[in-house]
Length: 65
Image (tube, rainbow, N blue to C red; front, side, top):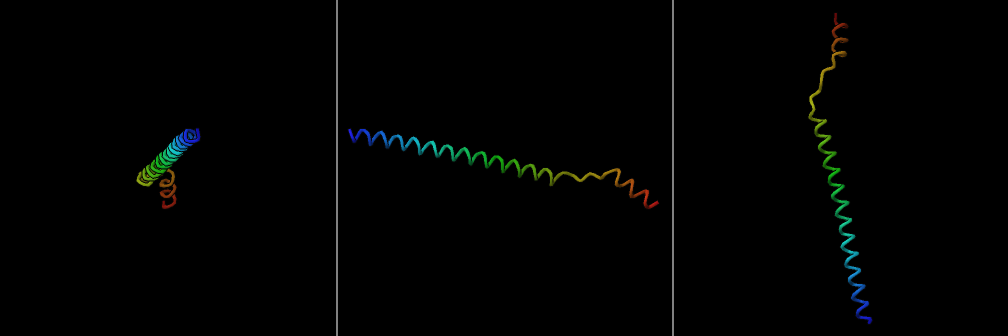
C-alpha cells in the first residue's frame, strides 16, 4: 500500500512539475512577444521620416520677411 501511495505521489509531483514548466514557458513567450513588439514599434518610430510642419515653416518665412 505504501509503495502504491509513493508512486501516486511521485506521479502527482511530475504532473505538477510539468504544469509549472508550462506556466514558465507561457510567461516567457508573452514577455518575448511584448519585448519584440516594443522594439519593432520603437524602430518604426525611429526610422519614420521627420515631416516638416507647414505652420513652423510659414512662421519662419514671415519672420524673415
